[in-house]
Length: 493
Ligand SMILES: Cc1ncc(COP(=O)(O)O)c(C=O)c1O
Image (cartoon, rainbow, N blue to C red; front, side):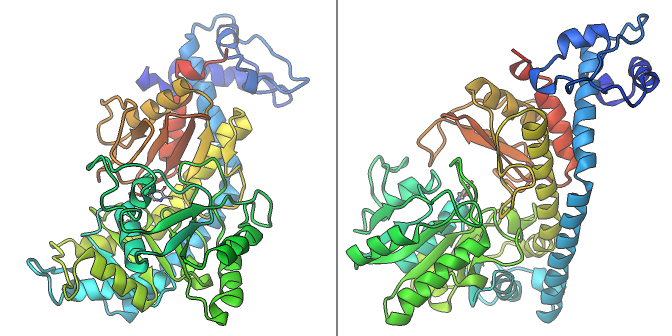
């Protein structure tokens, strides 16, 4: 079927001609008898008043051909309706690219930055320049960009262990943090050790969390009153943890303006009166989406992964910590050892520089892909999306509430099937290091686990949400949607 699905077969041509004969006043939901039997999807029912006209009686197309044509039309209609939005995203990409080009010129980037060093890794020109550039992109005083940071979780842990000391407490003000942070905090025993060894809890660092409130100018808001109560009651709170992106929560991601409101409050009410507090932001998936980053609006420390936004799909691994010089130095020492700086660059810095140069474009395509997924899944098929179509975006994640295990697994299978790597592999839910629940990952990506490449994952728990993200071109999501929605799990009841 695959050949027929996307090409225009003679049969499909007949169908298109038949649509043409019907005339514009008749809904294009009108279909030939064989397909209307199959394709009377409740969410795709013809609008009130539309006439269902039997088409060519001689038509011998199979139901599958017409189903595919109809799906393709739905996805194309969505894409067409989004063209103005896509243009706005392109203009945003142009602004980000302009910034990166200016920073590369300022730092005099040329091929000498790509040579790399091995062994101790002392004195690498590229490494120093990339640290400076990433600090500026993120509005920070300093940045530590390292291949030796394995992942987002590792970068976040390095930042937290650098900033906190035994006896300190951490207050998470954006609800429950991302699943892999549970073992770092010590809310769940470590998957390697079966104990709390090496967690913040093991180091005598306590943890509390507060929920976001649903109202507010930017869809979710910090509960400043609750934060004040906690800070008044507990003088040991040293670090305020914010997770910008939704993670595996069914909530809106937090807009930069709202992060700014929190930072301003902490600054005016506490820091300026002498209390030593650090606002830390888990910046995973948020980089380059808005015009400003958390440090531009007052955050002290941020961390993220290079196999997400800033790596532009070319970074083979790595992460970053950025913020004030003192906090970045503390994270550096935690990552390596006091007195030890550097780290081999393994000849990978061309990929890091080129990836950062690509990042605005690929983040832009990911945003367009997310808009398409939201429009098709919510507006056309009625699955709740977070953010909803047209909603404010501060990260590249598009969450789609599918409501059943079967649909989540089937959607991920479709993503994998239309991926460039391992399309023949069927993803199955299972236990994964760092995660408490069963999780399914569809990541047929060139870099293992890269979620700036097109990918989808989710924990197998209510309300069965597919978290989709990334792509190098938005049309890749059209192909995935057509593959997913034709599956039996998405057939009308
Ligand atoms: C908000 C957030 N923080 C942290 C992480 C952890 O990143 P990594 O998988 O690179 O460890 C994720 C992963 O998806 C995330 O969504």
